[in-house]
Image 1 (tube, rainbow, N blue to C red):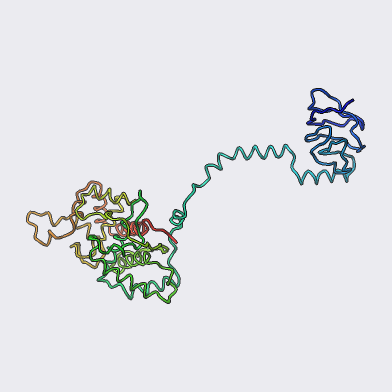
Image 2 (cartoon, one colour; image 1 turned 90 degrees about the vertical axis):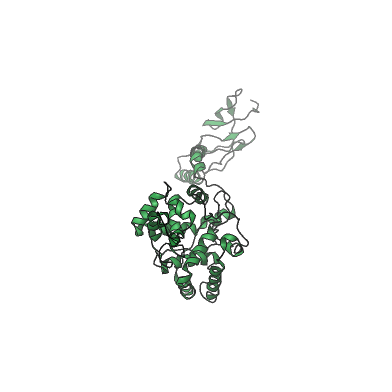
Length: 372
Protein backbone atom coordinates (compact mmCIF):
# COMPACT_ATOMS: atom_id res chain seq x y z
CA UNK A 1 0.00 0.00 0.00
CA UNK A 2 1.39 3.43 -0.82
CA UNK A 3 2.31 5.65 2.06
CA UNK A 4 -0.45 8.11 2.99
CA UNK A 5 0.47 11.80 2.84
CA UNK A 6 -2.15 12.81 5.40
CA UNK A 7 -1.15 13.42 9.04
CA UNK A 8 -1.99 10.71 11.53
CA UNK A 9 -2.90 12.28 14.88
CA UNK A 10 -3.39 9.40 17.30
CA UNK A 11 -2.37 5.74 17.20
CA UNK A 12 -4.68 3.55 19.23
CA UNK A 13 -2.71 0.34 19.59
CA UNK A 14 -0.14 -1.76 17.87
CA UNK A 15 -1.80 -5.14 17.22
CA UNK A 16 1.24 -6.82 15.73
CA UNK A 17 4.69 -5.95 14.47
CA UNK A 18 3.56 -5.45 10.90
CA UNK A 19 0.35 -3.44 11.19
CA UNK A 20 -1.42 -0.86 13.29
CA UNK A 21 -4.84 0.84 13.41
CA UNK A 22 -4.85 4.62 13.29
CA UNK A 23 -7.14 7.62 13.61
CA UNK A 24 -6.75 10.95 11.88
CA UNK A 25 -6.68 10.04 8.18
CA UNK A 26 -10.11 9.89 6.62
CA UNK A 27 -8.87 8.06 3.53
CA UNK A 28 -6.48 5.39 4.80
CA UNK A 29 -7.44 3.52 7.96
CA UNK A 30 -4.65 0.94 8.10
CA UNK A 31 -1.02 1.82 8.19
CA UNK A 32 1.34 -1.13 7.84
CA UNK A 33 4.96 -2.07 8.19
CA UNK A 34 5.85 0.11 11.16
CA UNK A 35 9.41 -1.06 11.29
CA UNK A 36 11.62 -2.43 14.02
CA UNK A 37 10.25 -4.88 16.56
CA UNK A 38 9.85 -3.33 20.04
CA UNK A 39 8.18 -6.06 22.06
CA UNK A 40 5.73 -3.66 23.65
CA UNK A 41 2.47 -2.03 22.67
CA UNK A 42 2.42 1.49 21.22
CA UNK A 43 -0.30 3.41 23.00
CA UNK A 44 -0.41 6.80 21.21
CA UNK A 45 1.60 9.24 19.19
CA UNK A 46 1.26 12.98 19.78
CA UNK A 47 1.30 13.93 16.09
CA UNK A 48 2.85 12.31 13.09
CA UNK A 49 3.08 12.15 9.33
CA UNK A 50 4.25 9.04 7.49
CA UNK A 51 7.77 10.52 7.44
CA UNK A 52 8.21 11.92 10.99
CA UNK A 53 6.68 12.14 14.41
CA UNK A 54 6.84 14.38 17.47
CA UNK A 55 6.68 12.55 20.75
CA UNK A 56 8.74 10.64 23.26
CA UNK A 57 10.98 7.76 22.35
CA UNK A 58 10.22 4.39 23.84
CA UNK A 59 11.99 4.45 27.21
CA UNK A 60 13.32 0.97 26.76
CA UNK A 61 14.29 0.37 23.18
CA UNK A 62 14.77 3.99 22.01
CA UNK A 63 13.62 2.94 18.53
CA UNK A 64 11.94 5.16 15.99
CA UNK A 65 9.46 2.96 14.18
CA UNK A 66 9.09 3.96 10.53
CA UNK A 67 9.20 7.62 11.46
CA UNK A 68 6.76 7.15 14.35
CA UNK A 69 8.24 8.17 17.70
CA UNK A 70 6.00 6.73 20.40
CA UNK A 71 4.90 8.57 23.52
CA UNK A 72 4.88 5.42 25.64
CA UNK A 73 5.71 1.80 25.14
CA UNK A 74 4.45 -0.75 27.65
CA UNK A 75 6.33 -3.90 28.54
CA UNK A 76 6.19 -6.64 31.12
CA UNK A 77 9.72 -5.82 32.13
CA UNK A 78 10.14 -4.08 35.52
CA UNK A 79 13.05 -2.01 34.21
CA UNK A 80 10.94 -0.70 31.35
CA UNK A 81 8.09 0.17 33.72
CA UNK A 82 10.48 2.07 36.00
CA UNK A 83 11.85 4.08 33.09
CA UNK A 84 8.32 4.88 31.94
CA UNK A 85 7.33 6.12 35.44
CA UNK A 86 10.41 8.33 35.64
CA UNK A 87 9.66 9.81 32.24
CA UNK A 88 6.03 10.51 33.22
CA UNK A 89 7.13 12.16 36.46
CA UNK A 90 9.63 14.35 34.65
CA UNK A 91 7.24 15.63 31.99
CA UNK A 92 3.47 16.08 32.48
CA UNK A 93 1.04 14.61 29.97
CA UNK A 94 -1.01 16.67 27.55
CA UNK A 95 -4.12 16.11 29.70
CA UNK A 96 -2.31 17.43 32.78
CA UNK A 97 -1.14 20.48 30.86
CA UNK A 98 -4.67 21.15 29.60
CA UNK A 99 -6.06 20.81 33.12
CA UNK A 100 -3.43 23.23 34.43
CA UNK A 101 -4.26 25.75 31.71
CA UNK A 102 -7.97 25.48 32.48
CA UNK A 103 -7.29 26.09 36.18
CA UNK A 104 -5.20 29.17 35.36
CA UNK A 105 -7.99 30.58 33.19
CA UNK A 106 -10.50 29.99 35.97
CA UNK A 107 -8.31 31.90 38.41
CA UNK A 108 -7.70 34.84 36.07
CA UNK A 109 -10.70 36.96 37.22
CA UNK A 110 -9.69 36.60 40.88
CA UNK A 111 -6.08 37.49 40.10
CA UNK A 112 -7.24 40.54 38.16
CA UNK A 113 -9.12 41.81 41.21
CA UNK A 114 -6.04 41.37 43.39
CA UNK A 115 -3.80 43.35 41.05
CA UNK A 116 -2.72 46.65 42.62
CA UNK A 117 -3.08 49.90 40.66
CA UNK A 118 0.10 51.34 39.26
CA UNK A 119 1.62 54.20 41.21
CA UNK A 120 4.14 56.88 40.46
CA UNK A 121 7.33 57.21 42.47
CA UNK A 122 5.92 60.18 44.39
CA UNK A 123 2.79 58.21 45.28
CA UNK A 124 4.90 55.35 46.55
CA UNK A 125 6.78 57.83 48.75
CA UNK A 126 3.51 58.97 50.27
CA UNK A 127 2.40 55.42 50.97
CA UNK A 128 5.68 54.71 52.83
CA UNK A 129 4.51 56.64 55.90
CA UNK A 130 6.37 57.96 58.93
CA UNK A 131 9.13 56.18 60.79
CA UNK A 132 8.97 55.98 64.59
CA UNK A 133 11.16 58.34 66.57
CA UNK A 134 13.08 56.17 69.00
CA UNK A 135 16.45 55.23 70.40
CA UNK A 136 19.41 57.57 70.15
CA UNK A 137 17.61 59.74 67.58
CA UNK A 138 14.74 60.38 69.99
CA UNK A 139 17.14 61.13 72.82
CA UNK A 140 18.94 63.72 70.71
CA UNK A 141 15.69 65.34 69.55
CA UNK A 142 14.23 65.47 73.08
CA UNK A 143 17.40 67.12 74.38
CA UNK A 144 17.35 69.71 71.59
CA UNK A 145 13.65 70.52 72.17
CA UNK A 146 14.16 70.94 75.91
CA UNK A 147 17.08 73.29 75.30
CA UNK A 148 15.50 75.47 72.61
CA UNK A 149 11.71 75.61 73.06
CA UNK A 150 10.66 77.80 75.95
CA UNK A 151 7.16 77.66 77.35
CA UNK A 152 6.50 81.23 76.27
CA UNK A 153 7.23 80.18 72.67
CA UNK A 154 4.71 77.33 72.72
CA UNK A 155 1.89 79.31 71.01
CA UNK A 156 4.04 80.35 68.03
CA UNK A 157 5.43 76.81 67.59
CA UNK A 158 1.92 75.37 67.45
CA UNK A 159 0.82 78.07 65.00
CA UNK A 160 3.84 77.30 62.80
CA UNK A 161 2.66 73.70 62.40
CA UNK A 162 -0.75 74.74 61.12
CA UNK A 163 0.57 77.39 58.74
CA UNK A 164 3.07 74.94 57.26
CA UNK A 165 0.65 72.04 56.77
CA UNK A 166 -2.58 73.88 55.90
CA UNK A 167 -1.41 74.82 52.40
CA UNK A 168 -2.39 71.26 51.45
CA UNK A 169 -5.30 70.65 49.09
CA UNK A 170 -6.54 67.09 48.72
CA UNK A 171 -7.84 67.46 45.18
CA UNK A 172 -4.79 69.29 43.85
CA UNK A 173 -2.45 67.00 45.77
CA UNK A 174 0.09 69.70 46.60
CA UNK A 175 1.15 71.77 49.58
CA UNK A 176 1.31 70.33 53.08
CA UNK A 177 3.71 69.52 55.90
CA UNK A 178 7.00 70.03 54.10
CA UNK A 179 8.69 73.06 55.76
CA UNK A 180 7.76 75.23 52.77
CA UNK A 181 6.70 77.85 55.32
CA UNK A 182 10.33 79.04 55.40
CA UNK A 183 9.74 80.44 51.89
CA UNK A 184 6.36 81.93 52.90
CA UNK A 185 7.27 83.96 55.99
CA UNK A 186 6.60 87.29 54.28
CA UNK A 187 2.99 86.42 53.44
CA UNK A 188 0.48 88.49 55.46
CA UNK A 189 -1.11 85.43 57.07
CA UNK A 190 2.30 84.33 58.37
CA UNK A 191 3.13 87.52 60.24
CA UNK A 192 5.01 86.74 63.45
CA UNK A 193 6.14 83.26 62.42
CA UNK A 194 9.78 84.26 61.88
CA UNK A 195 10.25 83.88 65.64
CA UNK A 196 9.08 80.30 65.36
CA UNK A 197 11.30 79.55 62.39
CA UNK A 198 14.39 80.79 64.25
CA UNK A 199 13.71 78.07 66.82
CA UNK A 200 13.58 75.44 64.04
CA UNK A 201 16.99 76.64 62.85
CA UNK A 202 18.33 76.44 66.42
CA UNK A 203 17.00 72.87 66.72
CA UNK A 204 18.67 71.88 63.49
CA UNK A 205 21.95 73.32 64.72
CA UNK A 206 21.63 71.46 68.03
CA UNK A 207 21.25 68.12 66.24
CA UNK A 208 24.57 68.40 64.40
CA UNK A 209 26.98 65.72 65.52
CA UNK A 210 24.21 63.62 67.08
CA UNK A 211 22.45 60.44 65.97
CA UNK A 212 19.61 62.61 64.64
CA UNK A 213 21.73 64.61 62.20
CA UNK A 214 20.58 63.93 58.65
CA UNK A 215 17.71 61.74 59.85
CA UNK A 216 15.28 64.41 61.02
CA UNK A 217 14.15 66.96 58.44
CA UNK A 218 13.07 70.54 59.05
CA UNK A 219 9.48 69.49 58.33
CA UNK A 220 9.87 66.84 61.04
CA UNK A 221 11.21 69.43 63.47
CA UNK A 222 8.16 71.66 62.92
CA UNK A 223 5.81 68.79 63.74
CA UNK A 224 7.92 67.64 66.70
CA UNK A 225 8.25 71.16 68.13
CA UNK A 226 4.47 71.67 67.90
CA UNK A 227 3.81 68.43 69.77
CA UNK A 228 6.42 69.42 72.36
CA UNK A 229 4.68 72.80 72.80
CA UNK A 230 1.38 71.05 73.55
CA UNK A 231 2.91 68.67 76.09
CA UNK A 232 4.98 71.30 77.92
CA UNK A 233 1.88 73.45 78.49
CA UNK A 234 -0.17 70.67 80.06
CA UNK A 235 -1.66 69.07 76.98
CA UNK A 236 -1.45 65.47 75.79
CA UNK A 237 1.80 63.76 74.80
CA UNK A 238 1.57 63.17 71.05
CA UNK A 239 3.76 60.64 69.27
CA UNK A 240 4.97 62.09 65.99
CA UNK A 241 6.84 60.06 63.41
CA UNK A 242 9.67 61.31 61.21
CA UNK A 243 10.64 61.00 57.56
CA UNK A 244 8.99 64.04 55.92
CA UNK A 245 10.76 65.43 52.90
CA UNK A 246 11.55 69.14 52.91
CA UNK A 247 10.21 71.33 50.10
CA UNK A 248 12.53 73.33 47.88
CA UNK A 249 10.16 76.23 47.37
CA UNK A 250 7.02 77.96 48.58
CA UNK A 251 3.68 76.21 48.69
CA UNK A 252 0.45 77.42 47.03
CA UNK A 253 -1.02 80.70 48.23
CA UNK A 254 -4.51 81.49 49.50
CA UNK A 255 -5.29 78.17 51.19
CA UNK A 256 -5.22 79.10 54.86
CA UNK A 257 -8.67 79.78 56.37
CA UNK A 258 -9.27 83.49 56.88
CA UNK A 259 -9.97 84.90 60.36
CA UNK A 260 -13.41 86.16 59.34
CA UNK A 261 -14.76 83.03 57.62
CA UNK A 262 -18.33 81.92 58.24
CA UNK A 263 -18.73 78.51 59.86
CA UNK A 264 -19.90 76.71 56.72
CA UNK A 265 -17.02 78.21 54.72
CA UNK A 266 -14.57 77.06 57.37
CA UNK A 267 -15.93 73.54 57.23
CA UNK A 268 -15.59 73.50 53.46
CA UNK A 269 -12.03 74.83 53.67
CA UNK A 270 -10.98 72.12 56.11
CA UNK A 271 -12.83 69.43 54.14
CA UNK A 272 -10.76 70.39 51.09
CA UNK A 273 -7.72 69.31 53.10
CA UNK A 274 -9.31 66.00 54.11
CA UNK A 275 -10.13 67.19 57.64
CA UNK A 276 -13.55 66.38 59.08
CA UNK A 277 -15.70 68.77 61.09
CA UNK A 278 -14.84 66.93 64.31
CA UNK A 279 -11.11 67.20 63.57
CA UNK A 280 -11.51 70.87 62.66
CA UNK A 281 -13.22 71.70 65.96
CA UNK A 282 -10.57 69.74 67.86
CA UNK A 283 -7.72 71.55 66.08
CA UNK A 284 -9.29 74.96 66.75
CA UNK A 285 -8.93 74.14 70.43
CA UNK A 286 -5.23 75.06 69.97
CA UNK A 287 -6.46 78.67 70.22
CA UNK A 288 -6.48 78.11 73.96
CA UNK A 289 -2.75 78.92 73.74
CA UNK A 290 -1.69 82.48 73.03
CA UNK A 291 -3.28 85.88 73.57
CA UNK A 292 -6.73 85.23 72.17
CA UNK A 293 -8.35 85.43 75.60
CA UNK A 294 -9.25 81.78 76.11
CA UNK A 295 -7.81 81.26 79.58
CA UNK A 296 -4.11 81.22 80.46
CA UNK A 297 -1.99 81.88 77.34
CA UNK A 298 0.50 79.10 78.13
CA UNK A 299 -1.89 76.44 79.45
CA UNK A 300 -3.29 73.86 77.06
CA UNK A 301 -6.78 72.90 78.26
CA UNK A 302 -10.42 72.96 77.15
CA UNK A 303 -11.03 76.61 78.15
CA UNK A 304 -11.59 77.45 74.46
CA UNK A 305 -14.80 75.42 74.38
CA UNK A 306 -16.19 76.59 77.71
CA UNK A 307 -15.66 80.17 76.55
CA UNK A 308 -17.43 79.52 73.23
CA UNK A 309 -20.49 78.26 75.09
CA UNK A 310 -20.42 81.10 77.64
CA UNK A 311 -20.08 83.78 74.91
CA UNK A 312 -18.73 86.58 77.13
CA UNK A 313 -18.63 88.88 74.10
CA UNK A 314 -22.37 88.61 73.54
CA UNK A 315 -23.76 89.99 76.83
CA UNK A 316 -26.09 92.97 77.15
CA UNK A 317 -23.17 95.27 77.90
CA UNK A 318 -19.94 93.36 77.23
CA UNK A 319 -16.77 95.13 78.28
CA UNK A 320 -14.00 95.93 75.87
CA UNK A 321 -11.88 93.00 77.07
CA UNK A 322 -14.68 90.52 76.41
CA UNK A 323 -15.05 91.87 72.90
CA UNK A 324 -11.42 91.02 72.24
CA UNK A 325 -11.77 87.33 73.10
CA UNK A 326 -11.20 85.07 70.14
CA UNK A 327 -11.34 85.62 66.41
CA UNK A 328 -14.52 86.22 64.39
CA UNK A 329 -14.07 82.70 62.97
CA UNK A 330 -14.06 81.31 66.54
CA UNK A 331 -17.28 83.02 67.57
CA UNK A 332 -19.35 81.89 64.60
CA UNK A 333 -18.74 78.16 65.11
CA UNK A 334 -20.42 78.34 68.55
CA UNK A 335 -23.80 78.68 66.79
CA UNK A 336 -23.11 76.32 63.88
CA UNK A 337 -25.36 73.23 64.15
CA UNK A 338 -22.62 70.92 62.88
CA UNK A 339 -19.86 72.31 65.12
CA UNK A 340 -21.79 72.90 68.34
CA UNK A 341 -22.17 69.21 69.37
CA UNK A 342 -18.39 68.81 69.38
CA UNK A 343 -17.90 72.08 71.26
CA UNK A 344 -20.30 70.85 73.95
CA UNK A 345 -18.56 67.48 74.08
CA UNK A 346 -15.10 68.98 74.55
CA UNK A 347 -16.34 71.55 77.06
CA UNK A 348 -17.74 68.71 79.14
CA UNK A 349 -14.70 66.41 78.85
CA UNK A 350 -11.13 67.63 78.60
CA UNK A 351 -10.02 64.00 78.33
CA UNK A 352 -12.07 63.53 75.18
CA UNK A 353 -10.71 66.77 73.79
CA UNK A 354 -7.13 65.63 74.39
CA UNK A 355 -7.82 62.30 72.67
CA UNK A 356 -9.38 63.87 69.60
CA UNK A 357 -6.83 66.67 69.42
CA UNK A 358 -3.96 64.14 69.43
CA UNK A 359 -5.49 62.22 66.52
CA UNK A 360 -6.29 65.40 64.58
CA UNK A 361 -2.79 66.79 65.18
CA UNK A 362 -1.12 63.68 63.77
CA UNK A 363 -3.35 63.97 60.72
CA UNK A 364 -2.54 67.68 60.34
CA UNK A 365 1.21 67.07 60.65
CA UNK A 366 1.03 64.47 57.85
CA UNK A 367 -1.04 66.42 55.31
CA UNK A 368 0.61 66.18 51.90
CA UNK A 369 3.83 64.82 53.40
CA UNK A 370 6.22 63.00 51.09
CA UNK A 371 7.95 60.35 53.17
CA UNK A 372 11.58 59.36 52.72
